[in-house]
Image (cartoon, rainbow, N blue to C red; front, side):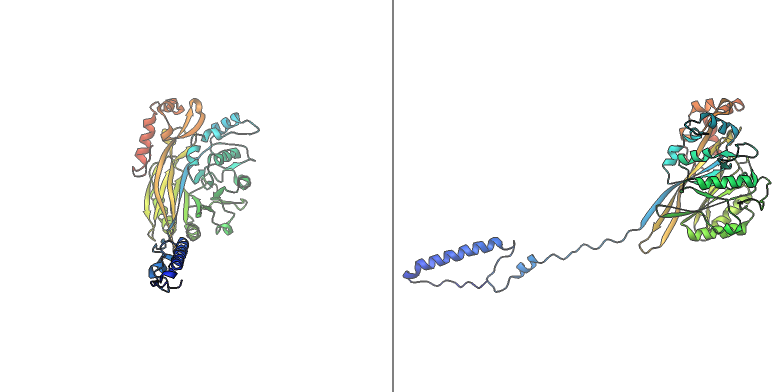
Length: 421
């Protein structure tokens, strides 16, 4: 806008014109001020003032860009002990069957299914062969209807360890039938422990959950004297084959964020951890295992942290005891579920840190009524004194009670890991 000059004094004959001109200027100025941005006031110069420039320019941002945050994924993992299906269990399942089913095992697992629903991953040692082809049988050579595994699936189990002392119970035909059965299960089922010969040893069973990859391996100390035969379509790997085990565990450590190894070892019906278990556990930790799940003794054994050669901390539970069975001793009816967290942290620069956190052993009870009827399993925290008084084991162990269960757990699991409630 042009600079406005200061009016001079005018002679009388020009006063009215001068007054009219001044009024027009004031009116124009008023209109101009209405449309100027707030804070932009003409100062009488040819260019806008500094204050006008600063008020129209966008303010420079003084907020720094946020620092990238690590991405943390935490999975809830459980491992369960021996699912040992004696004849009273599958005979009751046959009597309960309805709606076209041959066997209904859901009753056995209904009390623990809500716990499994709270986990991201559930692992179990399936102690007996499952198939839809073989006749069911009990001790000493087990065969279990496939409906049992389907019930476990409905209860929330997805990872099945198949390597134990009963894997060869039905010979080559049993292995072929069980392979066909597991191939028929849903795609999210993971099995481990059976291998189709030495050429298959490089295959590492993997599972990825929420961006976290877990490798599963399992081994057994023996197969009840039944040797591996060339006629068998699959085989186990024995704990004595440490060269093969080392290769597998090291390969799994390279392929996965976590390596979980099931080991069927130790002395049956003994709470004592033997030197062979401790030696192999340390080797597994050094080779790359993050969690070691022990099964086979049918009773509880303790757990501990191990320091691996590379500085990692590996957790080992030496025996989770039985999950479901109709065995006769009170301590055979008290098992535990291992519950822990698998945490993967990915830093902004791409480096990854993995840690096993907060391992706990939750005691559980296999319950049956008189005559080994109505077999089912409970977490200790859901078990009651009234149920304990009805337990069929009291026919030979009349002092069995809720206190009995608690003492068995406390006597065999370190307080650091025991979770009763």
